[in-house]
Length: 500
Image (cartoon, rainbow, N blue to C red):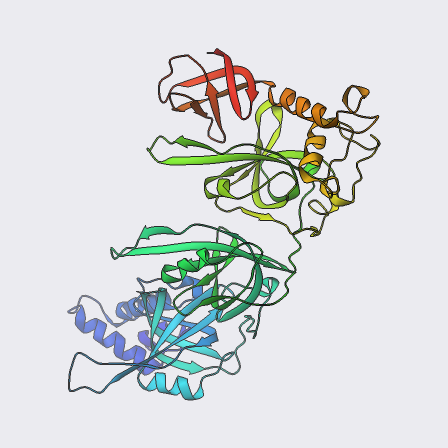
């Protein structure tokens, strides 16, 4: 056996020996005698190994040619186009999405292959694809040189007519899913590598099996402004991608999001507030017992920011939630039942825990009577407001959502004041006047806060990297200066007695 045959035998490839031998001879000729047949064969073998893609995730735009296995998840329409050569026949192309367990990729089939795909190809078939990767309009795609069905191969990818959130898997395409809108984000713009401007927006939808972030690209980004939390929508022709370890459902030029008249129940699984620990990213829910006004501030880069704090309570405890950016604009009132998802638990002031709701978080105001799986937002509705049995340290009353049933504003004030009949603070009933007094007394607690001056004037704004605080002080402070203030905090503003 010759040198070429030896190298070929060691090479696990679908390339025929005659084709491999011809490539070796071409390589010897190209190198002008600088390489013998064995060296040339080893070079060709190396190139072939580089082109073999174990999974779709291994495909990169810089590869000259790749070969991979994938299951057909969607088949587009055959489109025609005029070639540059006016005398040439009209061109045809058909885009097919194929997937494996690692992801999905769009494959462009040209001319005769496009016609064959239109007539013979079916969703669910497994294909062996050989082609050239490149960056397309919607991301990475492969321009196919050869496509063959493989009836014996198996690819672990589900292809369903309709999906639930729990059915979504990496690589799924042509996804139709019905869910309740839980939250929406504003439209953002970005610059593409080719200099064009892209647009993207997100909304979050949920069903009885879970929730998923829906990413809307370019013209589809406008859809996020058409829907309100609580509405039920159907996402059509979506495709699943992964971001930061989480699956997302993406909607591109072929996709749709439409309002539908269907009943969908979303039951979030929340963590009890008493079980929260610093550093966790969790879902929490509860009744709103305190709201602060929105505050704005300037960042070091000159951009503006905003934040709003609310305090929520479940059967096990209560926590302050900082709503950053667009989340600060959400309409949240006293007595609302709210679920916050993907919030980060941080160390707050006075050794308290604080939940931070950032761009990845969702904020959902639940309908009357809705419950969470753990009962955090709805289970509190079963707590009665009577005597102090089983109450907490702030008033002896389990001031859950049940306390809001008749009069939300009054019950919220009672929850803050700790009105319990004979088990309240000081052993007396606060009443409506007592509730207001207790609220004022509590909001005037002495606090100490250290942060960087991000806004001077009236008020001064300090930022410690996680929270911002408005400060009333006569001290002359400079932007960027790190200071500590101490004083009474009322209505979200620290009235500083000491600045050092």
